[in-house]
Length: 185
Image 1: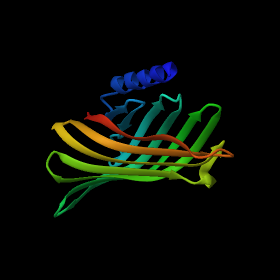
Image 2: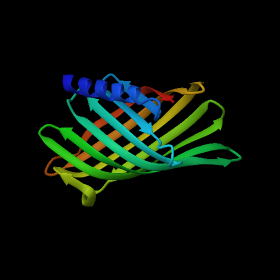
Image 3: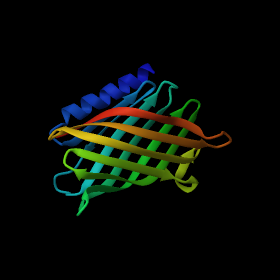
């Protein structure tokens, strides 16, 4: 557990030191797990977003991901949709097993009124793009957020992460409600 705090602290410091280039920093946690991630949009590539994140839990299991997606807004009479689609390179560590995967997925946030949003995301990697000890990777989340400041959101979310390792039953990394905050730069 101690090494995860060091890794998470290093990620946080890196995110803060590159705040001028970062679009957002997201931290969420519950009693047994924490995820920290930050996203960067290169100035010359409108709509392209790169994300680096690290998840760890009390079971000394961890997931590190590097993602790339295109994102943008879509307006309707009902509200504003913020949509992102792309993929992640995922590295999973659950001693003594490791998994690397190329997961594809999407995220969406719907804001029917100002300051309130409903979101969700899903990422999946089948056996064909899963390596080392793994057979598949699946993650999905749901959230409700509130915009406290123009660049700061708080939210309540639910996340489920399951990893299937060869010759081992599915390992559930997370299946809990969490609290989080996202700060935009």
